[in-house]
Amino acid sequence: MFNVSDRVRTTLLIFAGSTLVGLFFASQSFVNPDLRSVVPWRKAVAVNLTYYWLYGMAVPVVMMLGRRFPMDGRRWGRSLAVHITASFALTAIVLTLTEVILSPAVLGVRIDPLSIMVPLALSANFHSLLPTYWMILAAYLAFQYYARARSREVQASQLEARLSEAKLEALKMQLRPHFLFNTLNSISSLIYSDREAADAMLARLADFLRLTIDSDRESIVPLHRELDFVRRYLEIEQIRLESRLRVRYDISPSVADAPVPTLILQPLVENAIHHGVASREEGGTIVIAASGDSRLKLSVSDDGPGLSGNGGPLRVGLRNTQARLEQTYGNDFELRIADRPEGGVIVEITIPT
Image (cartoon, one colour):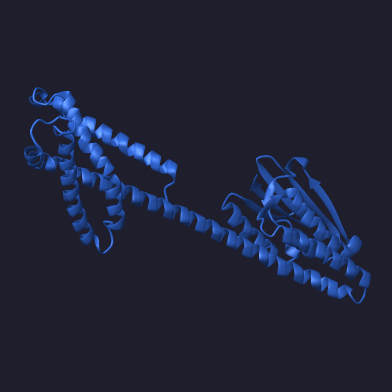
C-alpha cells in the first residue's frame, strides 16, 4: 500500500520523466535540419509534451495491467495478448486526445480540423509512440522482479536469523536438564545426611532458576550478569563441597559490560568442578578470568588431574558451549582446552566485543 508521500513522490517522478522524454523528442526538430524549418520549437514542444504527459497519466493503467497480467507463469500467452491490445488502444487514445488538446478549439496549435488531424496522427505517429507502452511495462515488471527478489532475500535472512535463534534456544535449553540433574542429584544425596544443607541448596537453586527465567528471551547479556549466574551456581556447589571448593575471580573492570552469550560460563565451571574438584578428596581451586580490548578473553581453570586424568574434555557442557559459539559467532571465535603447566585444565574462549 502506498501512503500519501509515496503517491506524491511517484506522481512527481512520472511527471518529471514524461517531461524529459517529451523535451528529448521535441529536440529532434533542431537536431534534424530537414525538420528545423518545418516544425518550430514551440510547436514541437507543445506536441511532444502533450503526447508524453498524456502517456504519463496512463502509467497507473499500465502498472495495473502489468500487475494483473504478469509476463510469467503458464498464462504468459494470455498476458501478452492483453498487453498487445492495451498498447494499441492506449496509443490510439493518447494520439486522439493529443489532437483534441492541440486543436483550434483548445490550444490552437493545429490549424486543420480533427477530422483531418486524428487520422494523420494515427498514421504518422502511431508506430513511434507505441513502444512507450512497452517501455513503461518493462520498467514496471523489472521493478516488480527486483522488489520480489529483495523481499525473498529479506525473508531468507529473517528465516536464517530465526533458525539461528531457535538453535541457540535449543542449545540453551539443553543446559537446564543437565544442570538440574546434577544439582538435584546433589540435593538427594544431602537430604538424609544434612537436611539444612539440602534446604539451603534448594533455596539457591530457586534463586538461580529465577535468574535464568528472567533472561529467557536474551541470548546475549553483559558479562557482569553472566558472572552473577556463575556466583549463584557456585553458591549451590559450595554448600555441597564446602571447603573443598575454592573460587578465585580475576575480572578486568574494563570488560564488565562486554556482551557474552547467556550461560556461557556455567557449563565450563560445572565441568571444572566435576572433573577438577569433586573427584579429589582434597578438592581444588577454580579460577574464573576475563580480560581483553577489541576481543574478550574468558577462561575457567582448575588445578585438578588434567585432561588425561578425566577422560577427555568434550563432554556435554563443552560440546554445547562450542555449538553455541558457532551459532552466535560463526568462525569468529576461539575455544581452547589444554592442560596447565602447573597442573589442571584451562578452557579459554575468545570472542569479539
